[in-house]
Image 1 (cartoon, rainbow, N blue to C red):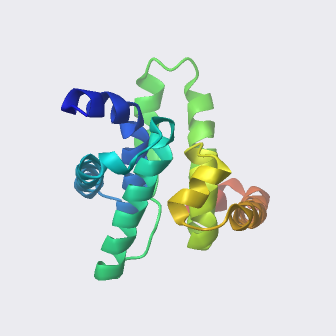
Image 2: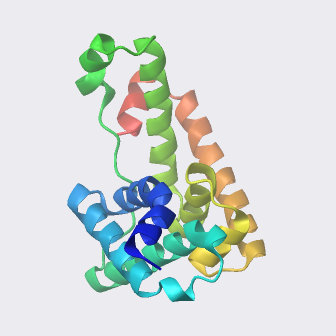
Length: 184
């Protein structure tokens, strides 16, 4: 396979890989390094990819394995990147060309709550939920990425969603000023 063919094969997945890496590393440079290392390993092992239709899950598997190896050696815990406080960016939203700044503020507030809830869910559930609901991977692809049977993935997603629903229900019941503090 030529370099051009490889680039064409992996390019559509770079955004998803970077986003997934960034949520875990919380640093742009670390996420870029992780994706770059993933691509280098993928290039070295491209001959092991028998079905190019499965490149997305294959790349996520490589990225996940590299990330887990790094966290094991550095003893860092997987955490999602915190979202910027709404107050800090409100003026930018108001001045932006977004049709409705209020809708964007509400959307980001809800996104903060979802990410805060996901960060409180145990990793084995959170990873499965994130790969399914945020990254759009199939159960089979997640099974491959996490090296866990599909039935276990389905169970983890169901349990993770249930835990998140409970956390989000608590968040909705709080007064608005407490909601804001809970998502920081």
